[in-house]
Length: 109
Image 1 (cartoon, rainbow, N blue to C red):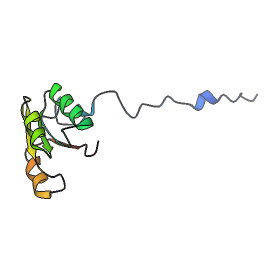
Image 2 (image 1 turned 30 degrees about the horizontal axis):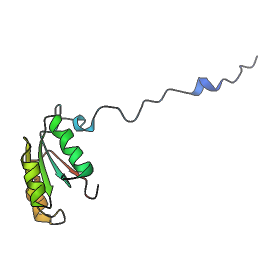
Image 3 (image 1 turned 45 degrees about the vertical axis):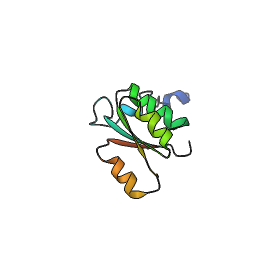
Image 4 (image 1 turned 90 degrees about the vertical axis):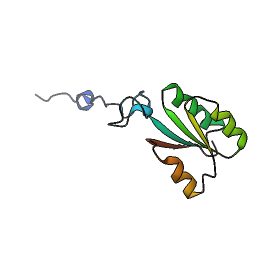
């Protein structure tokens, strides 16, 4: 007696590759969240949203921006250190990253 072919016998449920848990807390060994995060392009658009999200998660933010106005605006927020500089200047970026657990760039975003 031949057994009928059942395609479902060969199908297994795939484990989702991505989860809904924020990537801000996904790095092994980092605890619940990053403590200090560098954000290039932090003054507008996506970068500013990232800054707000990081602050609400309890992280400190080092924000690299291009204008004095952006430095003043972001420096007024608790938990933000705003640095005026050029993201294409290696030494500025290197110095800004000191002590940070993570880096995010939203340049042009």
